[in-house]
Structures are given as C-alpha cells and as structure tokens.
Image 1 (cartoon, rainbow, N blue to C red):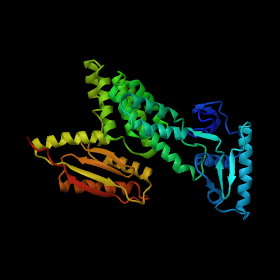
Image 2: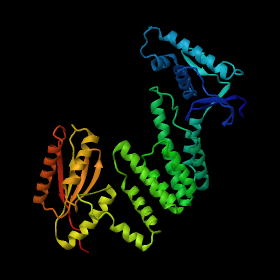
Image 3: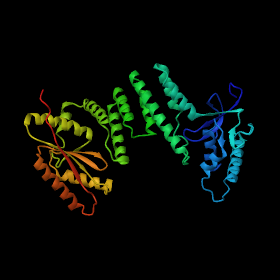
Image 4: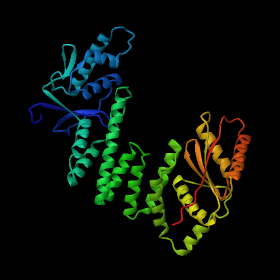
Length: 396
C-alpha cells in the first residue's frame, strides 16, 4: 500500500513485460504474463500505458478491430475486456475490479495506484536535467539502470512501435549525458559499463565506441581499445557497409600508437618495413584517407605537381553490395600503387590519383569504367565521376 493509502500495482514495460505488487516503486514478486495470448497482452499493455486517462470504446475498437470479419467489434471488445479482467484477477486476486466501465469508456479503479517503470525512467531523466554535479550523475545512473530493455520488446503491434522508439531515444540521450559527466570526473570504469549497456540498444553510434575506447586507453588497456575498434568496424560494415567516423579513427590511431609504444626498436623497424611488396592502389578508411590527403597537399606545395580527387559512384540500378565489391576490386587492380582509395558509403568511393593531371585523370577513369563493364557485362551499374584538383597547402 502506498503512502496515499491506495493499493499499488507495479508494471514493468522496459524489457520483458511483467507485473506484481510493489511499494513506492520497488519491485515486489513480479510475475510473467504466462499464456494469456498475444492480443490479450497487447490489449492489457495498451490499458497500462494509458492508465492516467479514460479510454473510449471507439478508441479501443479503432486500435484493435479496425477491420473485423464478424461485423460486431463492440462484442469483440466486450469479450476482450472480460478476458483481460479475468487475467488481472488471477494475477491480483486480492484486488477489486481493476478496470471499471463508465459511460462510453473504461478507466482504472481510482482506489488503485498504477506505477510503471517506463514512466519512472522518463521522470528520472527529466529530473536529472534540472540538477547538477554529483546529484545529476547519480540521478542519471539510476535512470539508466531502470532501462532493462526496449519498451515491450515482445509486442509487435503498430501502437507500440513509436513509443518504443521514444524510450530508445530517451535512453541513448541519457547515456550520452551521463558519459559526458563521468568523463569530466575521470570515472573510466563506470563509463565502460554504460557503453556496454548502450551497445545493446544501438551498437552503431560512434559516440559510445569513442567514449569506450577513451576509457580503456585511460586505464592503460590500449590493446582492448584496438579490439573494440576492430569489432565495431566489422559490425558496422556487415550491417550498414559504412566505415567508422573520423573521431573513431582518431581514437583508434591513439590506441594503436600506444600499443606500438611497448615495442622495442627492432619490432618497430620490422613493422614499418612489412607489406612493401603490395601492388595496386592503397585501400584505407576515410579517416586515414583524410590524413594522407593532408600530407599530399604539403608535398604538392613543395613539388609543384598535381594530384586529383575523384568521387566514383554507382547508379540507382545497382545491387549495392555486389556492385560495390566489384568496383572496389577494379579500383584496386586498375589503379597505380601510389593511388589511394577509401569507401564513402554503400555505393561510392573516393580516390586520390597521385600526380595526375586533368588529362591523365580522364584517361584513368575511362580505363576504370571499361575494365568494370568488361569484367561485369551483366551489371546494371551506371558509373559516374566527380573530380576536383587537389590544391597545395598554402605556404606560411
């Protein structure tokens, strides 16, 4: 029973749906829904989410029986409400009728206070934004801990999807805010825990992998930071066929340099001399590409030569994965050893043609296009090129 004298029922909607008695929001002996049936559970969950207001019969019919073969959605609603009440009675045998009918609507029994973990989560996050210092950190940590999984993860009803997205966004925002605060306090171990939780919701957000790698580096675990990067890069490519953002590459470069710092001079000399026999263009991530282009601009300022940047794109009629790999293969085999290649997105690459003038660039691109269509005559790819002459770095 709550402080207001009302009986309290606590529902957990974040993660697996469960319910039970609780006092002041603390979990009692929660019970799983069992075999009530998917539609009954979805119907009950809808009533729980909207427990603070009356829900009209028309709203429920429109939500759950927009098209009914029986032609009697009103009767279907009565039957559903009977099943839902029976289910609640089994869960809470000591309670009176939990769902009451008023003229034209249903409401929760006003003598019972309904508490929901999702609402506590939202309230905690909003309260944290009004606080500062250690109070804010503790409030955020407590809020993040409430998120046990996506909102009603097992409910695939249309009405649940936008709410699920809302709480996902709220959770990820809370994680970003607490990570920023923990970073200022140099609480590295706690940061790692938050990042590992956030990956369960969205592994592809570069913010979390940067914080994670930074914390590992600060703890002297550069090797683990490199492993985290490699896993992130592999999963990002498998899922979206994109490369990590520049800030991820920068953290990777830092972690890698720290790993190499433990090598002796002979190991370093061996490392930099390996791979010298490689042929064809050099393929790298976009972050590395940018760094090499910056070095090339310095070189051009001294040599007075020319180099050209080219964006090579596939048309809309392509098979992204297949044709992109084909194009990459042609670029790697058809360009010179000194040329540079990086992937921009699922259907385009950026290339630096070292020492290439406008005329020689046209010749190279014609050769690339001919090689592609000769090797893959059945492809519908329509290759386009956008070129820009690389400007030397201005002399100081």
